[in-house]
Image (cartoon, rainbow, N blue to C red; front, side, top):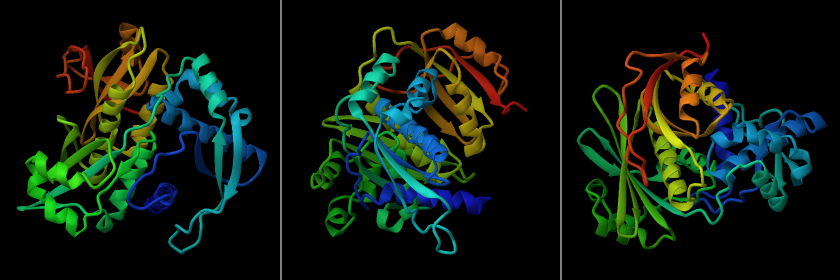
Length: 368
């Protein structure tokens, strides 16, 4: 099973990294590709729906939008919205050096027609250019701290690019050549030494600088402290968990939330955010099942990951009908309310954060 998952991850990595090794160019927000079984009409129709879902999530900047009720009316018209498509041969990613069975379906959708339909359905669209983000990473191993070199961490590099690509965020990695190393050290990054960070970053085209400091505790837990630099302003946040790569991916998700808050003003009548803690989300499959269930709920305008600590998540759920949503959660077949359900959680730091919100705690059961 792990081998099969690995093959799909390698294929996903190729899809993102084939466009460039070190920097992620500004993405074509209206195109994407998926693996389909064959070139028949049924496989193509389902493939176009999957690609269009990717496009909707990228245009809105929110993963949950692509699985909401409003998006379904748009997905149903995937075949009529497609502007062009073609089939590609999958790369050789299997252990035996052969390409996986099936074909890669690439498609691009008509920007004008798609955006008109999204507006009609009330699906938010993030207009304007995505800011280019330059990412510096350092890691602490025992008593040693060192800058992470993407050339020496291709799997980690690919995972971060894939996460940023989901929302069309251009992510740039430094070359980590002698010039970079002579200007910036791991100690500088750890201390948020702004002069060295600015000097090292000046050679790269960017709008924002994101720095991350990764460490592990004696009990095996990972954490990453992040600083997001824009001009003279800096914002700090943290992600935690049991897996190194997932902690860093969570950092890219947290970055996305901050970019969305900066670049896209809230629409009139936008709902409030409710924080909920959900325990026992102990695998990617469990996380996917939870997200699918949340996306199926009416009245939910957005789902945002605020914190990840092992198998426990803190999610921000945006809704215009707070009490109705809480009743839905209490009755959810995949959730079990935990003691202290009325306790409030501390509001995480975020731009333009509202005041304290109602928070509840659940255990994810997956309907069992």
